[in-house]
Image 1 (spheres, rainbow, N blue to C red):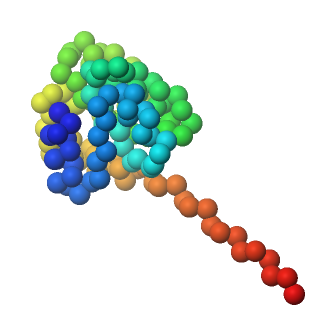
Image 2: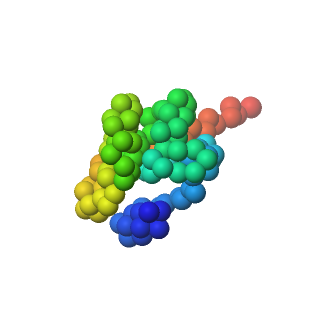
Length: 124
């Protein structure tokens, strides 16, 4: 799934950072700005539902749009209760629909403004 998503998203011009599981994804988030998180619900070590809860529970990432992907109906029912979830795609997903959703969500989350440098007062 990761390889297919990477090919699809990079082909559309997006920069992609892959994680092998929820723990690795959660560890990568504070290091840089991300416009969107796409997660599988079934992952080793930390599943998608745990990852979603952790992301939404952090001040730094609470506004990060999340798309979940699953192949299981029973997990789909649990995800519908998640706040802040901007999409749920079932495997196999429709590439065109997923790209449209990604484009819309990336446009929603603006990169934080860089603090302007305040000039030092000149001494005369």
